[in-house]
Length: 247
Ligand code: MLT
Image 1 (cartoon, rainbow, N blue to C red):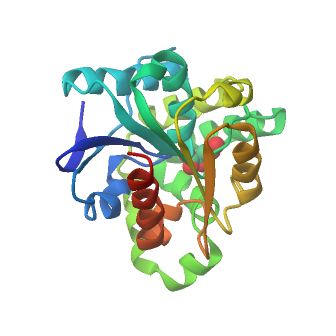
Image 2: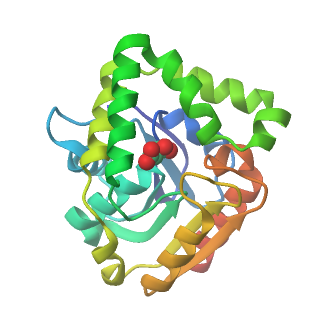
Image 3: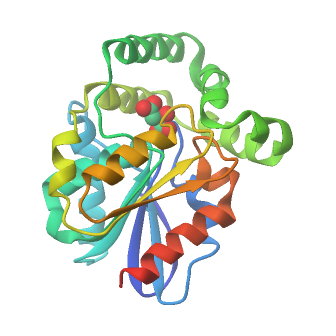
């Protein structure tokens, strides 16, 4: 299992989006507040285990690092995994972070889109997946004004082995609806959404804020889906404020 980490103190586990890796959290790992240890694993699963497999992988990392309780969260697919991990191991959460994600399962149209992406991946590889995903992941502004971010995201996608991407597509396509869980999340929750996120728009976060007892939502202005990469400073500030307010 590969993971990145930075800082020392209370653990904060950050789970990555599709089709990326732990490296998407580098801006947050470079700005860890005093008294915290940020940990970002590459998600892994076994064939057929789907989203629960990723959750067990994250749970196994907690065991390996001898971490009993942590603030745990993720962005987009990382959020889907966070819901699954909370179902398996709720007592190991001190706080929960859900960024640019949604509780609902895929719609039928969404599943058809996933199958098309699997075919594209099989026929044309990760570069073709990057071509399709970049306009979904990054806002128009970022694609125009932040060529460095575009390069980082493309490079991370193209570094992913095709079987890893395919397993993630299947896991997302088959994930259950987490909406019934929202009312039962007992720990403080931070919801983050990029203002211009078209995959999981801010109103999804605002709906979750109403459904989760101890949640608060932060909108990252002028950011798309990968809000932590487009506006790393604003994202990190929202995360740090939340951690410090909920010690
Ligand atoms: C992600 O960012 O993890 C994915 O785009 C989420 C999804 O496709 O549902």
